[in-house]
Amino acid sequence: MTAEAALSTPPLASGPGGPEALRPLLATVLDALAAGAAERGGPLPAGGPDAVTARVAAALGDPLPDTGDPGALHDIVRALAAGAADPADPLCAAHLHCPPLAVATAADLAASALNPSLDSWDQAPAASALEAAVTRTLARTAGLTDALVTTGGTESNQLALLLAREAHGSGLRLVCCAGAHHSLPRAAWLLGLPAPVVLPAPRGTLDPAALAEALTALAGPVLVAATAGTTDAGLIDPLPEIAALCAAHGARLHIDAAYGGGLLFSDRHRDRLAGLDAAHTVTLDLHKLGWQPAAAGLLAVARPDELATLHQRADYLNAADDTEAGLPDLLGRSPRTTRRPDILKIAVTLRTLGRDGLGALVDQVCARAREFAALIAEHPGFELYDRPVISTVLFRPAAAADDAVAAVRRRLLHEGRAVLGRARLDGRLWLKATVLNPRSRPDDLARLLELVEGNTPR
Image (cartoon, rainbow, N blue to C red; front, top):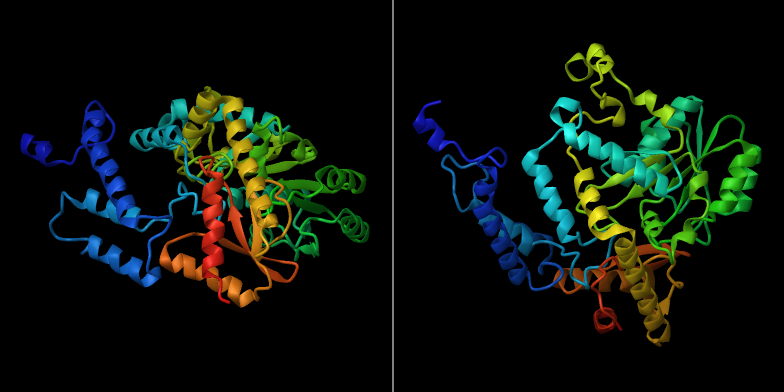
């Protein structure tokens, strides 16, 4: 390469000059994030989809111009921040969408700069060792043996069904309740399994009596999928009773703890997950109740030998003689090939905060949710669905019709004033607040209630 070509080459994020090349760019990004947040001025951009699209288009201009623009980093990041739903705003509480910890986000920058790919050891020597150590620790925390890193609950649930199918055959029948995550029946469809048996859940959770009846009636291999933290209401199925029924009927058990798995860090709330260690597979997701930047999912397994079904041989990645010589074979750790080291941010968070630090965050959001529920219960203008099990609170304006409940949510979204979710339970539509921000204060939650009250059609 000529000296002239070297000077015109954009700087790289890694290598000897990487840190110095990143330093001014990081300052640009941080300035743009601050400017975008100030421009947004709340939890969500105002104006709805059309207004946001117009503002993004104005900032973006020609996405692929003939001549580059050195100001693009600032302009596009600012536009993204101005048009973001900010999970760190206490009035942004619709989804299992957490504000990531600063230390985890900083670690994620290092992962992007170094860019290891966990499909072969020679692309990720340290990252592969880090992943092996941290995943096994997290699996043991859940009472299992090993864990795979995934992109989140959906991939983990799909992997759980894949492992079950390979262990028990294509006639495997999934049994779940109506409150289970949509990724479970979808995974059964993707894997060519028989139509799932979906049990009614009038109280939002899997009913042991209905499960016992189904297991008695079904012939052939069965996979029961229980949930520890439903998406709609944050409910936890009766795991010990379900585990006992599975053992009695010879059924395999998968527990989707994508939301509730974070309770494992809390001394105060860990007992709610009693029975988790009886599962064959468990879905965990630390970009929910773990404050990680997405993606940070895991699938914990009780029988690591079952992971052999994921094994593939590709000579350029895991040649047999390399494996025999001691180079780790990583292709059996995921159905994906190229994989970024998402374990890095998790490892840094675990070491930085420890179990006590993470447990304190869990306790904080659970306490705030209970306080919010108490505030609703005491307010004559609102109806509370039930006391929160984790940190999700369902409520609705008293005597309001479902279309009025839907309308107030959309009005607040359009105005950029608050982000609330929605859930249909007991045949009625409820507003949903999922408290995942440990910095939320009681007066923030009171403000959320005031906004709903002030915007409810009369």
